[in-house]
Structure formats: C-alpha cells, structure tokens
Image (cartoon, rainbow, N blue to C red; front, side):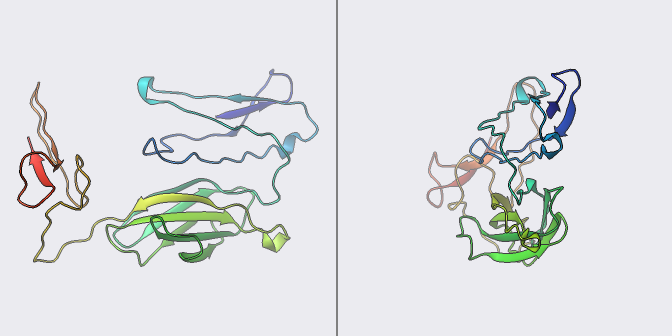
Amino acid sequence: DIEVSNDFGTTWTNVYSVSGNTQSATGDPWELVFVNLGGYTGDTIQLKFIQDGLGCCGDAAIDSVVVDEAPTCPWPTQVAVPSVTSTTADFTWTDPTGSNWDIEWGPCGYTQGTGTFQTSTTTTYTATGLAPNTCYDMYVRANCSAAGNGNSIWIGPIEFRTACAPFTAPFTDNFDANPANVVPNCWSAITEVATGTQAVVETYTFLIPNSTPNHIRMY
C-alpha cells in the first residue's frame, strides 16, 4: 500500500494498493506504477509505503521513487493476463483517468509495431485467434489523443503462454526441444510422496537417452 498524509502524519489516506504476486520469476521486469497525487496540489505531504508479508514469502521491493508533475497521459498499471485458453487470452489493467487504450501482442520477443494491434474503451480485452501452447508478449498504453494529450508510454512486455489443445494421433514427443529439469509444456506431473522420499518428473540429460539429449526421468 501507499498512503499519503497532508497533516504531518496525523491522518493517512490510501492512494494505491496491490496484493498477490506481481512477478512469477526473479528475472521478470520491474513494474512501472503511476499514483495520481493531484488532489494534494499545493500541500506539504508525506508518503508511507506499507508491506504486509507472510513470513519468508511476502517480500516486496521498490526503486526509483519520483514525485513530479503528472504526465498529461498517465499510463495503465497492474497489467495482467488473468486467464487463457488454447486460442484466447484475457488482458486486464487499471487506469482510473483513461477512457481509451491501445493493445498490441505478438510472439515472445517480437518487435513492437509488427504485432496485432487493437483498441479498447474498457480496461479489459480478450485476444482471439491465438495458437495453442505458444508464448506471447502483450503491451498496453493509454490513448489520450481525443483530449489532445497524445499517448502514454507502452507498458510491457507482459509474457503469457496459451493453453495446450488436444492432440490428434499420431503423436510423438522426444523431449529434446524442452529445457532440462522442468515438466515439459502440455504434460502434468502427478506425484504421490511418502514420508522421507521425493518424486520428480522432469526432463533429464544424465544417463543415455533414446534420443539425444533429453528424456523424462521419474523417481
């Protein structure tokens, strides 16, 4: 949470809140967040950052805090892809000041300007016609051109993968294209673990595979 006080700490008002994971991996990019403090113009204010954790697993980090004149076209925040199917993906974001947004998506690593471009008048959008089990990047920006304020910066890439579709026989998978030590895409590991033991299903490069370099190891 971010709270602001304009009476030297006597009272505090919440101006921003986020919960749950905002990253799924340590290498995920930082999220750029805009908090509108226009209601406190001319005031002397204090800001307070609050983090409620769950022991070892509730870490939070902030960096590069800037208090400055607000951009004329603020960018969306809390951009997410909360659900996918094999051919669709739902995009959501937060933007209390905007009314029009541009969305672009394409295969992971694509060059912006070469992807699929759409517009939205709500803070949700469903992309269709996607390929199953495919990695995509999506971007979103506020479009303030109707008010003469141009566009915000793009927020992204937000990476997601579509769900797997049913396979049609004949089907083969030698696992050689999968990274090691993970459960391959479109496979599930169902394990029953007794006390003091472990069960692992993963691609593996040790021993002698039938096809080089990977095979599935179960132990």
